[in-house]
Image 1 (tube, rainbow, N blue to C red):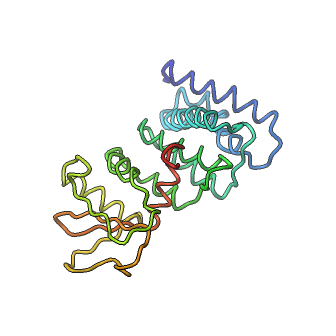
Image 2: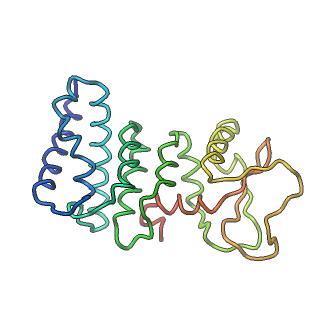
Image 3: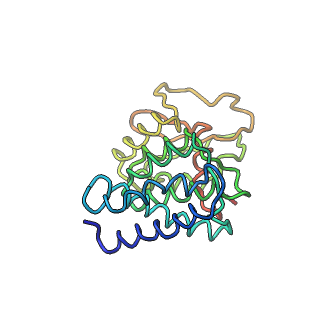
Length: 233
């Protein structure tokens, strides 16, 4: 059964999503595309745990996204998103129940829909967000404090102490980040960044007991995509 809070969120989808369906004429309208299935499945959600789980998660992300769009001054009822980007996004976010990661989804969507933000929904970033674990967020939040787009002559070097987490937990997160293309790994002593004497962006490395993890350009794109307005400058 849906709890009172979950039912309220589902009802909000029904009310606001149905209004968008009735008034929005844009083919591929984002909220129409995203929440049509949720509206149709509200009755089933009360009896079917899997459907209910997905509906609750969509509802949570929807409500948070709407609030962020309001903060950005974006008319949420009129935004659009092409189906090729929308389908992977919807399939991913409906499986995320962690509130902190739902917040990441909402910020990513809101940034992509704000006309003054250099962010778009794309499969690369969607795949990164869908594969994050809650304990990754402390690392991401720390990395977000530095502007990786700023060109530097010397690489910024970090360790587990900079993140305030257990070294083993850092190892697990960084291994996931390598698989997602955010970092590259090497364990050969003496290697340096290419063009070591030149100023270049994305010069950041993290030293661990296994070796050195080096930030990749995709990390910059990802951090820009999920940045709050004040972080994005």
